Every structure is written in C-alpha cells, then in structure tokens.
Image (tube, rainbow, N blue to C red):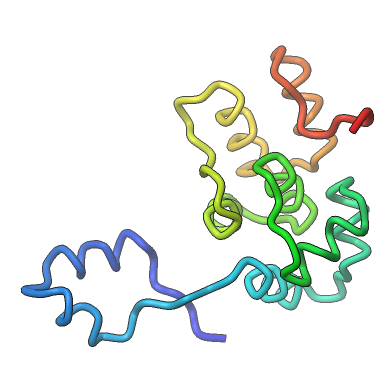
Length: 145
C-alpha cells in the first residue's frame, strides 16, 4: 500500500499553488472513510483480529463490529479506546479521530496531554487509565457504561 503524504506537506503545496485546480490536478486528495482506515490498520498488524481489538479496546463487540462495518461512528472516547485497541501510534490515532469526525488530541488540554503521552510511550488502555486516574483525570474506560 502506498505511503500517504503528510497533511502538513500537502498544505504547503496547496498554499503554494496559484489556483485550487493546480493543487487538485495533482491528485493528492482522497475521500477516506473510517471503516476503510480501520481495515487498513488491522491489515498492517499481522495476526491481529477484530476480536483482539475488542479485547484490547474494552469496547462492546457489537460496537466495534458496527464501526468496522461502517454502520456507526464512535464518540471521541470510544475512538481513542479503539486506537489503543489497534496499538496506534500518535499519527494514526489523530487520523482515526479525524475520520471519526471528533476532535484530535490537543496537548494544551490536560487530559489529552496525558493520553498523548501514553500513546507516544506505547502504553495500553489500562496503563493509560491508571495514569489518568493518578493525575485526577477522567478515565477512558468506565465499567458502568
């Protein structure tokens, strides 16, 4: 699968174009849906199955299968939990959040900063929730829900 260009690089090219058509004619735009991106991420993780994502994300299996099937979009916390379930790095997590139609993680927000640190350091969802709890922030997984 070809590597996508970084958004920052594409933005530079767009802003440097003499017209929108000059940029659009380069064929760099794409219409991507969340379910397609999730399948791509899963394919890139050798041996990982959706059931593994369900376990690691702690999301209800029906919810995960509906999201993978394009039947629904996750809320922000569920999208973050899904990213943990897929062992996403920070760039993949931010892209997943964008495609889910929710705000990306923002380092100026205290809770988001903790989550960013956890993602960047390869922590699991459980480990991230322990950090959030320790720092008196709302955890991602709520067994009551």
